[in-house]
Image 1 (cartoon, rainbow, N blue to C red):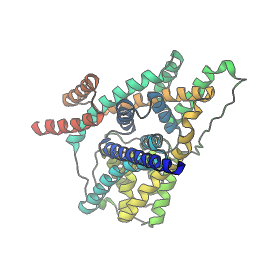
Image 2: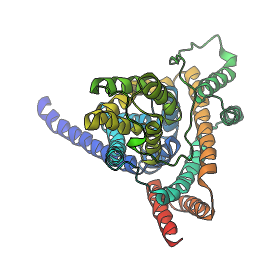
Image 3: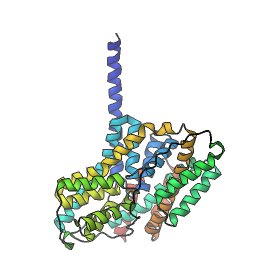
Length: 406
């Protein structure tokens, strides 16, 4: 009788799980295809979809995932997608969400790599990007407002956030800001109970990671003829190199160029510096994670097999790290020490989003068309409950239209 009852229940559970996996695949394939603007924009789009529209996680849980993703190596937005997948559908969801978010960017970047090798130049879509960037700024601004209202729970956390923003604008390393702000906020909040609580904080090793280098306003140009490759690595060497990068990369796209320049150009001499800059520019130009530049480089070095192993190598560690952290993340908040640490890290993470948005705004808001698109997008988001994805697509269409009539 028990087995008979278990049959329909098991079938229903399987159908529910399959439905959730389909939802995850559909959502993250869409986000992977339209997530322009870097990690801050990706996180803003994700918050709108999984917190506000679908309510898969609470805003506090979303902030905890964001703070944790900033503390481990790898691309923050990709790790957020992986974590949401775990919360929604456990281990299968973790794999489906992460792979679905990465796949569109990898395919688009691979197509650009093919054109780069075949035609000797990078296709341009400046008018579309000119519309997407200011629309993305509006999406980020609204997300920062919503997340900030949840994260800044008292005046002390507000002060930590302000100090974090100032430190970022003055050039302090984001990892130091996150850990320093987290420890400062935790100690300040729990100073009265130092003797009664045990402190368990895992601090990832950071053995001399290189300084942050940022490619801003770089116009992709050049060709494969800019310099012949001195050496041609094997497929195994390509995969192993990008696996190492993915395992130790803090800061996502902000420090990616430094890692790749030191390894690919200086140490191994597999690429010229011009080819590396073209690859990173394509990673910024295409939707999805900036680390999809690995797909471009892998294709140049080893064709389709090289692109596949490079993409898998650079993203695989993120699945491993999130798989270790996700099952215990929300339980960690039950400790008053860890809760205070997470609250402070969350505020610091929002402050970093503010800092990145300021820098993006300086680059994107040039001329009346950009201001028109940005303010119009902001007004629509504040007035109507509309998916940020449509705002991003609409911005690209308006940018193309304005460029045509001008």
